[in-house]
Image 1 (cartoon, rainbow, N blue to C red):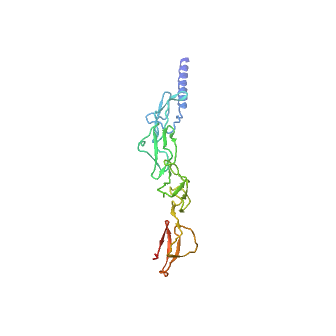
Image 2: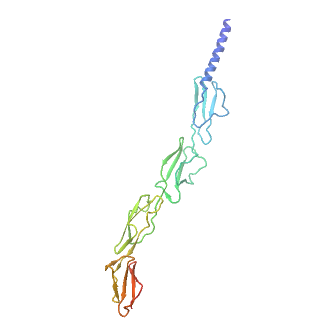
Image 3: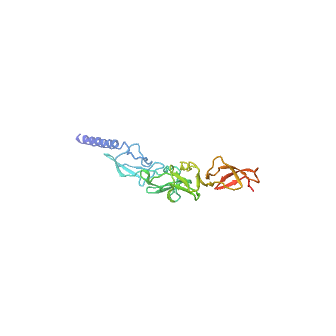
Length: 262
């Protein structure tokens, strides 16, 4: 009788241990972006069972996570971390350079971005693939830059950056002409977000001195010593061509007459 009681007690104790083990491992470990492999998946887990956690599609890991079921719950054998660098960082108007482009990226891989034609950045934009995804090593922006073309020798410009520097949005230039020249256009222009200037570059035109000729009789509306480009004056030829009349236009520092007096 005593022996049968002892055997029954041992059997019940074994069932209790099994039940405790099953309850301790009823909840699977939380491994982000991973799932239990088909080979190790079970409806119930007992002490000693091992489960593997491969990464979800689009994620990779240097090691597959492994856990073993114990009487106290799941114990990690090897911990991995699933990360994804499949989706590239969003850099507007930028693209990955051919030298750093790959079909698949692993932890430690670095990519460089170059700007699209018409855009520029102050520094090379760099990202590194880490366990958390892409991390910015050197973050930057691709923006439009304004260009400066060839300018007349008599046009002086204030605000030009050094030759190796780009001109950003908001940068302003001021203009001035040399002596005996008049500024035609805006005194100040600004670089816009579109990469265009707020106004065309101005030009310098030469003044015209007072028109004097013993064969001309001038009809001045205002007698000046200096005339601007585009100014027009009327004149009349003296004897013997007193009937001849004409106009003279100041053009690039010279008078262009409609009638030549003889």
